[in-house]
Length: 356
Image (cartoon, rainbow, N blue to C red):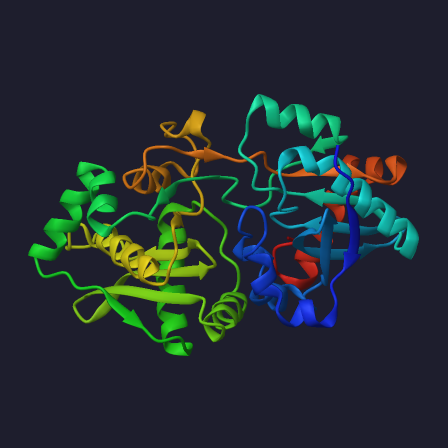
């Protein structure tokens, strides 16, 4: 087993955070980015920039920290740590040593590594002493399209249904427009997202202020793009896609219901995919589907989204999801047996925002 050390990032590393994260073993994740850190810092969470090192190699990971009365501090390594599954145990032991050294009073470290679900992965998780916790992020199961090849090869790789929809939309005059970031664009996409949630209720919708700040932070760093189609002069389909290192993520989207244009949503995604290729991305994450075992389960709240997204890539990738690394068994038990539920309810009532 390899030995790791853990420390907080230097000022230079923090200033160049994205460069370091995208050089991680698995290429990082947009939820570990400087943009996301800016969104979360001060919104009930304290942001820490954590560096895990072994043998001259480093993994840079965003930590969200929150304090609670009696319990102490919770650490949430969102979409991390970015390491091989065999390295989780020594890396978490290094985190625990850092917590003790700095007297940080952390009772649990919540981890969420982008490690594909498998029997081998679960064996490593168990050996690391990790305890399964409810998943938090929507893309712990997701559809990922390989876009590393030429455009023609990527197009051939998607389903015939998707290809036919894209071609028909183009033949019938559907156009996709890229819009510049700004309040007018943000309001347009948020309105489409609200329409979709109202009609399908598939996922919770945060406040407009949250999304506006989120989009602005990524766009100001050149890491976000907006794509729209129109009907009768009004936005009908919209999407926000993030380019972070080699990974593209279809983060937010929405549409009006009962549209006349056939294939418009497929054409939006295909246009976004081509643009992400131009930016150097090699994979495209559609960001959220039902688990592979339930992809055809019509009772799942993400069934419709799953059917659309898997028209581009048949396979669903299930990650191991969220686990707790327990530093204080007594306080973690209080957290798991009701403390988390109570604190989430209090914060939602106080702020009107989601807890995580």
